[in-house]
Image (tube, rainbow, N blue to C red; front, top):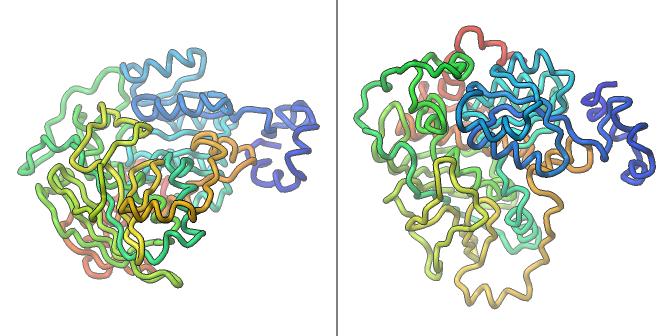
Length: 471
């Protein structure tokens, strides 16, 4: 029996953790191809530099992962060397298709830490082979790609996790406990913000074409890097994190930080998909890369007994949202990891959120940062009545690997992370066209703008890459 097949069907047949503890690994473990709790998950790492390399280290450091393959389109780049040195004897590939073709039956899980636009084909191929997937946020670049990824995960019954780490940290458990206890209730407005400097802030908004191509580094497989995207000549401003600047490759500040500021609000307030997205303020708009500043208003309808919610996103150095009286000091959580291009520097207002309920207002940061009630005197009055918040049983990486072994359920599985990622894709369409969009939540179509509706799908995949949309 293959390990992945066992994880789909066999875990329910076991009577509990006690059974695992008394049966030796040689019986329930690798002898028969199952993943026993005492065994490690055989994982491939796709994207081993920058953020992908950091994820690889974090997965390995849990003690639950056995790295069996490494894949990166530029194995000779300086930023890949640390991971290559960590795993000198592990098979290496530049093309994920070759990796899965040659080693698919030896891979139980894969980490996808590549540019936003390339998450889709790698993840789809892995899931179609029954391989569990940890994929960085956001899940994909277009609304349809996220939709197909959710469907594929359900079809093949694989374990999935999107890499928004805060879903396994204190904010997740606090928000859940406070919502269930009725502390967070009757929320009508949320502000989410990231006002730090972004990579494209030095670009010229009057740009009339993509930058000219330059010679492809000898160590890089540029064709595989492009994947499903339209052809572009190689350019240093397309790689090594710079891809985040461009509509063709990335999801801008919203896709990058929205998953760290909106995630618990979106899940526990059951927001789903908006019915309207309005770019109420855009500066430096152009057709190639993201604006210098954006204010996006997402409108969500009533959900059961919960009132409608207006969620407003702010990015840009000088596009600072107003804060309520008694907000206090804006601090950077020391546990928030810095961006791949350097240190996260303090801004006028550091990344986070403000949640406005009928009776209470909450101040929060990003990632796993906990909420506080404002103003401070109100928080002190309520201190004794706040519910106890459980501690996390595992960090985000261990949660994924333990789920692969049947011991936990992932907290940011595609059914949770998919609709959140689709919110970002709708926001990016509104940014890109600089126009309000009306979205039908039932038919999942944009009804007021034909071009915007086409962008739900995006352009046709590059020739030779169509099959990933049919898996």
